[in-house]
Image (cartoon, rainbow, N blue to C red; front, side):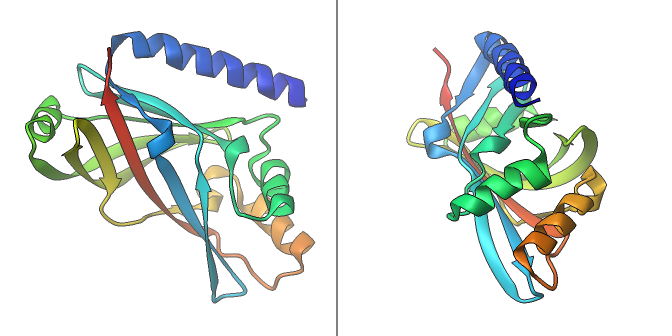
Length: 195
C-alpha cells in the first residue's frame, strides 16, 4: 500500500512538473509554507506546517499547488507519523491538490510593484474529496518574486474531507479529551519568474 502511494505521488509530481513547462511563475518551495492550527483539550493551540510544496501560476492565471502530506511537521516525530498514517492516510493519499484561476491583471499589477487584495475561489482536493473554498489573499512583488499570502486564516472542517474519524483516532491514541475538527489554515507562497 505504501509503495502504491509513493508511485501515485511520483506520477502526480511528474504531471505537475510537465505542466510547469508553460508556467509564468514557479513556486519556490524553500520560501513557501502552508500552516495549520490544531486545538486540543479545548484550549491548547499548536501550529503545524507542510514545508514541501510544488506549484506554478500559468500565463493564463491558472494556479496549481501540490502539498506533500508526508512532509507534515508538528515538531514531534511520533505525532508526524500518526498524522501521516491515521489522519491523512498518505499511503493512499500522498498529496493534497489546490487549484484556482487568478485574473491576469492581478498578476500584472503585483508584478509592477502594486499590492492586490482579493478573494480567490479555490478548489481543494484532499483525502479523495474535493471542496471549494474562498481564500482571501494579498498578492505583491517581493524582490522580483511574486508573493501570495492569506490575509486571514481559512477555516477548513475535517468532516468536509472525510477526516473526522482520523481526528478522533488521533484524540484517542493521544489520550486527549478533544481535538477540534475546525482547522485554521494560512499560506505564505513565493513564486519566481519561470525561465
